[in-house]
Length: 65
Image (cartoon, rainbow, N blue to C red; front, side, top):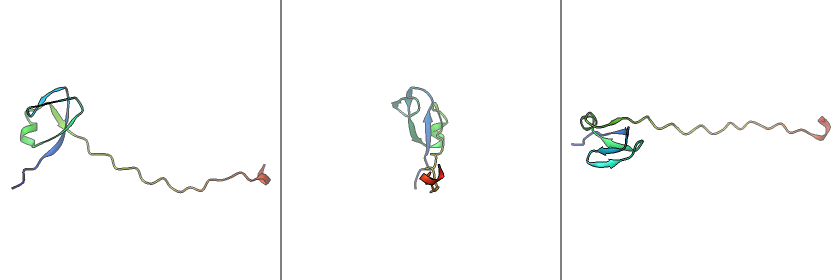
């Protein structure tokens, strides 16, 4: 049986689950463990931005000046 864990963000420097962690570290805990620790659910990682659109650049030609 697999125990379901989730990512949690440490809110302040200190001990979390028997390990000293720094603020903003991300730790994997079960919901039952997280209930008693100084953590908050970690935000979902932002998706990579879409590839920039291939806009054609308008070049100034010598005759347009």
